[in-house]
Length: 320
Ligand code: AMP
Ligand code: MG
Image 1 (cartoon, rainbow, N blue to C red):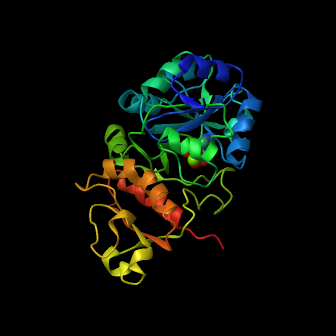
Image 2 (spheres, rainbow, N blue to C red; image 1 turned 180 degrees about the vertical axis):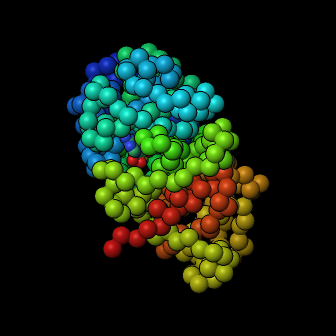
Image 3 (cartoon, helix red, strand yellow; image 1 turned 30 degrees about the horizontal axis):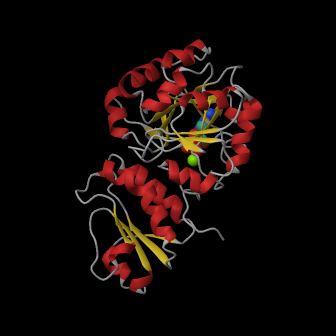
């Protein structure tokens, strides 16, 4: 039985350097012992992930990262006090304990304490952090339920710990602390405004400008199989297509001329947190309908709207 809630079994597998899919509040992760190079290599192989794209390591408390010798900057401690366990990841200098395969040779490591009771319990019982990227084949839509993981990777991993649907539903916000000023590397499940309020300053957006991302290589991501287009005005754009062959991902509105089963309203009450939590499941379901085109709109650039727009944009990029 590959899916269940058997924590002792998950521990046994992880202690023998096997892969286990784990629930978090953001998306499901594909986890392995971060201190074991072979176990981590297996993550890259299973996801078909390029090895220049480093992994986040997870544990249950900030003190454990310190016990493993990592030096945590004061601002990271402050933010962790406010937001951990939670959907924010910090990039800090790595040390010799963290294998290069985890950091992609950048000398920096990404750390997070995820907010999910099952995974916190699991992490507390392990003597090592878990390296865990999202539990999907590289480039495809991230999983927000155990079933999604089973559909995409079920035959390749030993066990999926089932923790229900992910409450946040988009990946963590990533902030780098490698330079004098903290920089946003990825919009995600924690609103930038909340982070800025704690630090009492505006954050700049940085690029992953070290070795990680060869220009453009990772821009297409979170991708459905069918083409997705972001439009200014859904109701006008719908008119340009065969209305029976169009899928719609909208914030709050639905459209009488499109079959209701082809429409995915992310939040009737215009709640961006709710919209984010429904986004990936909507992208999956609309893709399964096998339509000609998926249309979506721009979300407001506030709170989790940044993360939603980022994921939609990457999903819309056409490979040529
Ligand atoms: P995923 O776990 O699939 O959401 O991907 C992890 C993200 O964290 C990727 O976008 C990586 O580029 C980023 N990341 C992980 N480690 C580092 C690092 N050492 N420096 C910069 N970015 C990182
Ligand atoms: Mg991912």
